[in-house]
Amino acid sequence: FQGPATGVIVERERLDKFGRPLLGATVKPKLGLSGKNYGRVVYEGLRGGLDFLKDDENINSQPFMRWKERYLYCMEGVNRAAAATGEVKGSYLNVTSATMEQMYERADYAYSLGTVIVMIDLVIGYSAIQTMA
Image: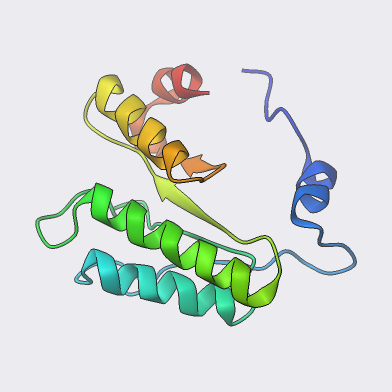
């Protein structure tokens, strides 16, 4: 793995953010929210001035918040915040799963919703991360 394809300069150009730190956070509380409420937190954080949010590593697909529902509401929050602020916003959706097939499915679904970035938990292993890259 040669490292990321781009650096911080390209990311700043994509976000159109210069002369200040990029502001990000992890959604809290990390467990217990429905997908709809999780998406609301994403919207409020981005609308409040964050550039991006990310899933906590242990957010995966729980009975109270399935991954498809979370992705859908997160991207709805991202799109609403971007429209409200006129800024590029984002959310790192956790695609980590038990099998590579499931990870591909999740990444494809996230992409279909308009995300340009996903996250993979390191515990899945370097081979899986390299394969997903």
